[in-house]
Amino acid sequence: MTDLRRIQATFVAAEPAEQGEVTGVVLEFEPLRVRLDVETIRDFAELGPALTIPAVAGLGKVLRILRAARIAAPRDPLALVGRDAEIVALLERARGIRLRLSLKRRARLSFVAWTERGVETVPDVVDVLENDEHYVVLRSGSRAPVRFARAAVSRRQTQHERWYEVVGIERP
Image (cartoon, rainbow, N blue to C red):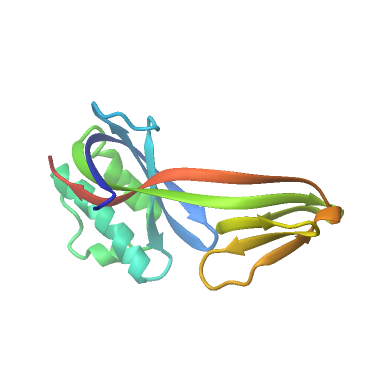
């Protein structure tokens, strides 16, 4: 069984964005006639600054939108890597185009603890175990668990973030 969902959507906006040292474009889509728990699907297409595998994948998303809108891409599309303003200008011309998106549902759990040292956040949590003396926060991957002494924690909370990742873009 696959958790891939295909929907019809309209491309509505693109804006340059930075996530740490990585630059790219946030792509926005509005679903058509489909019930999702979000009104707008936002996806980040990484575009540099260096030529990496994620940057080429992000460039692929941009080029699929341009192709669906019948907008000619530059002769050397790899030259667009790291040039967010130029990509946003090209994508502005594609506004309003209908696309078929393949979406994957994603989720992230984090643990927030208020302690004497301040507010501490542990991202990418798998589970939180409790005993009489500690909270043990298990993290995804092979990272070591994080322990918080119960006596040092004045308040705790888990935060759940959900979104859709665009894994495919096609013409309808």
